[in-house]
Length: 363
Image 1 (cartoon, helix red, strand yellow):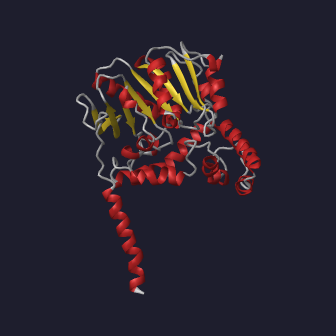
Image 2 (image 1 turned 180 degrees about the vertical axis):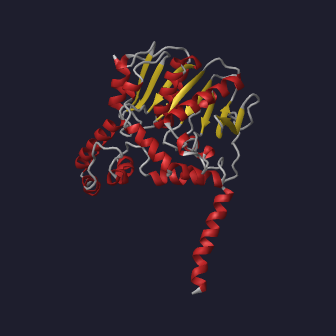
Image 3 (image 1 turned 90 degrees about the vertical axis):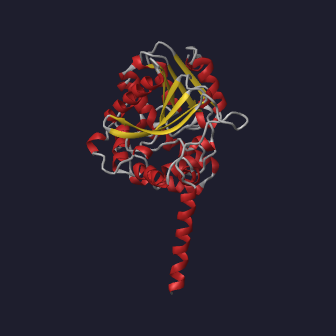
């Protein structure tokens, strides 16, 4: 009996040891084409006091004189920097790219964070404060701001609040009216399962009917991500499972320590993450932000049903801004910068940095 108990214990010890070996927690260097460190490059993993809370970020660039680009990740509370290894964006070639882990997420997770500070308004304020830190550190009057998914909900509000700090705002998988987006996604998934004769998933979706309520029905939330990813309309077009596509890769990442990896999922599964998500559902961004005083660009995957492609396109048509660019990524779902990185870089360097835009998709 004792021997039988030793076997699973030994297995746990081995897994723990392997995870420790995979978790040195040091930033990977920025290298040139020959694998040598770039002379004027930067690769840092740092923590900075932002509005009274130590918040972490990864800073990468082949040249610290590059324009600064702040990336506001999705979730809530789900950093996606680890995906940059599986799906290299190459953004450090053109920008000093800052992958910030928001308050309550990843490097910035703290178990004793007051619930009163975990609000949309606070994270918007944090975004502005991180921006000011980066402007001061790199000697920039303005920086570029990118928001992805939940980060687009935060980012576009930060851009509206402090436009004088930003050259432009780039929304990737832009949130608009998320409750309506969920309704559209549910209808699409039902129809797609019928067309594909995916009886098993269809029955699961029918057993978890969507309702326009906040919070969303638990039965729907339990099947939502699995259904989206099985149909190729989730995080990326080729990611068919959150477990294999997101959960396991976080544990294999080498730039987070083991404790920091635990904190990624503590933050993601926390009560404050649920509260923030519900706040997204009751907010219509098209009403909250009817205008921006800076150029705005939307980068959207044709197959994105995590946030509605159609609603985002309609929003940008109505949004008042000095310059607007809309870009459809035909082979992408929710994350064009990871799925089609070369085209993303081309848009950023040819249009965003030069202050021009592609208008044909929204005319």
